[in-house]
Length: 353
Image 1 (cartoon, rainbow, N blue to C red):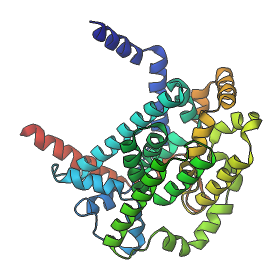
Image 2 (image 1 turned 90 degrees about the horizontal axis):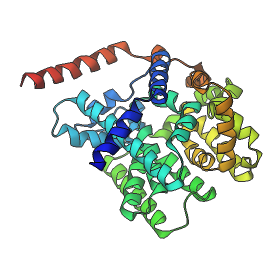
Image 3 (image 1 turned 90 degrees about the vertical axis):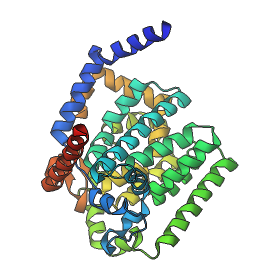
Image 4 (image 1 turned 135 degrees about the vertical axis):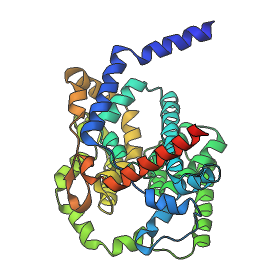
């Protein structure tokens, strides 16, 4: 009886006035900023066989293969590329929700506080604008890694992290030690090295490819433009509205945080600036969120201003250093229509059965 009462209370909370206002915020954010789907074509090819080589200009996808291996397993039981893609993304979202709950429990952080940090950062904009990238797997596996004491979880999360983006994962490991987010324990070194060995076995089996290093060396002109075009706006975009409590919380600015920030900004110049910098800065985000001084300044800011209205104003620095805020302009309408058409066909055929 008590269990049922607890469930009723939780369900009633989901439809409270505060929750409804957040649902409305997310709906307006989605309608205004839009969503875009990436990697669907590569996904449709590699779920048949993750070891099939893509064309040279797309071979950097082989360095972030986590989704393709998951899709490969799903495709054995579900004969629809589009449904497999959708389920893979739902797995990523579920993993992120689990990782956030685990993280909040470990660091004793309220979910409401984390939600406010999330919407004031560029996180929501990035996850919607680059939907289909391995970002969700990368972030969630890292949060699990630093939030669990279970050795199996540490090993599995390390593997997922490396297979999501091994270059950023290496930086995560270094930054976590620098910011003291993890202790120097054998299990972390063992899991990280084991993950790298497994990943390199996969690359050896795959054969010679043109990875991100080769891609960067052939696009130095784009990297130059990305670095210096709209430089200050790009710097602002990596923390967005969180810059206000960061600047006010003076004790957060130290040698180690500056080192992490500078490295992340440099990393951003070699990719989609805001997205790449934001992902690289996740350990610093964790450091900030768990800092009481930052929390105090953030909540003070939140209590004074309409954050849901402020949080709607987001932008990112992307290709060639361009500033964009609406993802609808990027959308390949034919690809979206094909995705929805095939998804509905699969649903209808199974309903008829």
